[in-house]
Amino acid sequence: MATTNAKTKTRSAYEALPLGAVKPAGWLRNQLQIQADGFTGHLEEHWGDVGPNNGWIGGQGESWERGPYYLDGLLPLAYVLEDEALIAKAQRWIEWSLNSQRADGNFGPQGPIQTVNNDLNKMQDWWHYMIMLKVFTQYEEATGDERVVPFLRRFFGFVRGTIEANPLQGWAKARGAEMALCILWLHRRTGDESLLELAGIVAEQTTDWTDVFHDFPYWRKVEEWDWTTHVVNVAMGIKAPGIRYELSGSEAERAAVHRGIDSLMTYHGQAHGMFSGDEWLSGTGPSQGVELCAVVEYMYSMEHLTRVFGEGRFGDILEKVAFNALPATISKDWTSHQYDQQVNQIVCNVAPRNWSNGPDANLFGLEPNFGCCTSNMHQGWPKFAAHLWMGDGSGGLAAVSYAPCAVSATVGGGAAATIRVGGEYPFRETVTMDVSLDRASEPFAIALRIPAWCAAPSLTINGANVSLNAVNGYARIEREWRDGDRLTLTLPMDVTTTSRNLYAISVERGPLVYALPIQENWQLLQKRERFHDWEIYPGSPWKYGLLADSAYEASEFDVPYQPFDAAQAPVRLRASGKLVRGWKMEGNNAGTPPIYPNVDGQETVELTLVPYGSARLRIGEFPLIGEREKAWKKRM
Ligand SMILES: [Zn+2]
Image 1 (cartoon, rainbow, N blue to C red):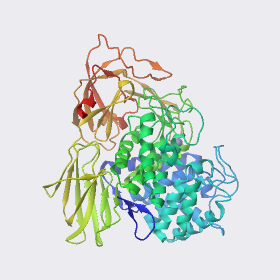
Image 2 (image 1 turned 30 degrees about the vertical axis):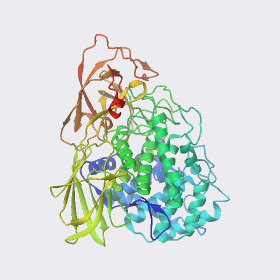
Image 3 (image 1 turned 180 degrees about the vertical axis):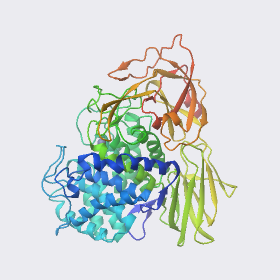
Image 4 (image 1 turned 60 degrees about the horizontal axis):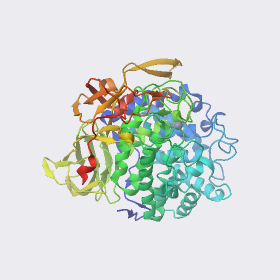
């Protein structure tokens, strides 16, 4: 399905729209505003690592990844919100970098690298540059600043002249796809074919993720250091075969991505759509951790894999992670976050746990365990918003996710189109898309992602039924669209239970995972001016299993300003469960859900489940009580 782009020599199914083409609306816009009002809009004032002394704005402080990480979220947030104050904040960093470029094309802070990390060569590294390159591609798209393309050409000239003598190492070697994708971005912008050669060199120097994912060797929790089991590297590396596919068109690269995701979910999968990693890949246990950096990087990888392959699977994963794992690990007012989240998270406190991270890794705070997530978390929502829609390379548009927004693009033979997406999906099943054109009508295609979880999607256009024929997860509607057309897409969300290890189950409805919320008793651990550290202790019982024959009844409530708040959850499920007598705490966590839960004499109680992302204490993987429905029999 991939087409070779006419102007360039790379292959991709879709094209990302320039930053600013998609404007978030509804709950998603509110979410971005909450982020701006919390950490992202105020981190510089309260955290020295990205404050006035940062090396990337000319100071003597941290000069490795933290400044670029922060900007890689601040800048897209500023432009999707069209917030002038945030734009001005980001611009200081942009101007400093542009003005720092030297005659040889290199730029950025000079002298030994200042960082608390000790696992890098502090005299020379490529990794932190890769983040800043991603910032510049977004900045150019949003502003058209004519300084950027020549700046990047000079820098890649410097890279070409030095990268063979100073090859990618360490973090940069594991994450080289991030540089390759920026080189390919510049190639598409300029048509310069010498950039393809450079992209090939960088891809060749990058860890061979294609091999890692084809014959995946990590079947159990990993307990020792390795670049290819580090959860953030894996979350980033999954897109590396996709970037190689852009260069080569080899189907072995596409297969590597799918085999990699299958293996990760089999051996390390978690109910919220990600794999575990409380530093290294750490198995399927629901009390293992997932680092916040991995959450936002996996989302960014899914955005690129959607662009390259145009397959609905990547959008399904993107939504599941964005709507569940991301909000769950950040406080509802965006003033504290975790390093590690757990699917079964019954207490967040300073205590040793079965992981290689510190005893504070599941606290909600400013920089629990380590400050990487504090600087990197900002990219999650803004980049998600920017990739809700893509171009199909031939004048059409593709809906990657149905979160509310307005997308504007040139379509067909040159018409200006805006599509307004309403409906507060994923908290509702019906999505409306209103088409406006700068002329009466225009022929072009709209490709609608049909989620794999949806058994019976339906579409009307101006009230008339239209059949949907999904190929690789997208249903393409090609017609003469008229100004004022309305598409109404209904994606019925049935409740399903997913079998997990030892017959435990998780509960899903559409792209949302549902969890039992535990009453949260937030206790202040360290007070600061604005961003404090908190422990959370449980105020209600957590040892519930779900009955195998439970009915699940969904109820809808108003979608509040912050929908990821258990007390105001816009969708709730009623289910039946029992307290499990023998379910123990192990190592300061909920123990493994028992395979034969002891519920002798226990009453059946009605439980209310809420979206996983709204409960900061919760059970998301439940012991199953009673005779399991044998789902395979339905498939035979
Ligand atoms: Zn991190």
